[in-house]
Image (tube, rainbow, N blue to C red; front, side):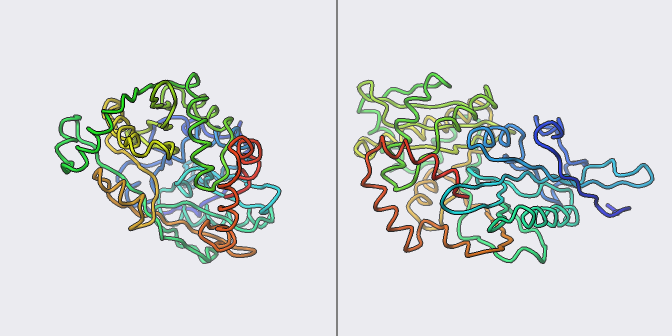
Length: 366
């Protein structure tokens, strides 16, 4: 494509000025599929539902940068969009992120020029809001001189799904099949639903986050996701003797089933309930006619990486780019020495207390 005019940038007001096509599966910014494969494609984080749910659930102000171009008719062609949120809390300062909670976001653009224009606008907004840094959760890098830090130490683990459950099982080694079979011996029951399962989901999720040493998100976030996505988001809860012991949130968007949050209780690890849960999640994705199951990000070679790889998931790039204005990006990482001490303290707190104070803390972490 010949760029007839330079891209023009607009900062749109939330939510009234957000374009309607962010709601659905239509191919925008303007252009055909071939054009998007050479540009920066739409990711799940670019759906309006995610922007609305995260903004409402975490109470973060949302912004949308839109680049446009055109010829004699004026700037009538959308060449890219970039959703952003201002993350701020009482402990860590201010950050501009695309997008918090999710693993993806950043620029969705028809070519490198439009993507660079969006990033320039995001850096300007970061200056205006006086944040510590701008974080863009890309899957391929955008070339821009103002981006001064990059993280590629994690990868997205994704499984290409066959058309049937039977075909999926044939891909697995005998050890995996035997672990799933063993899980079935403990009488676990599997339940699917939405808001009626939220309390059970959150009970498991909050306890697991405490055990990991991580502040828990508010229940309001998950309620907002279920509300904004309606039938495209659901909960899975596994119970043993009527007690919830494992739970997951699923979204089904654009042929991709994603698990943004999943947990199981440690004292039930011996029952392989987590294996049974993921077996049911994969079956559900095939039922929903998804072509891809997204397990989320992992560090290469880690325990979670190996867990996901055993199901057949393969690594895909995660390129998180930064415009750092103050401080050090690595200071926010959980494996830093200071944060490791905080994690050990958090793991000793009662769950009820982490549910009370955790949401206020975690909403300020990018």
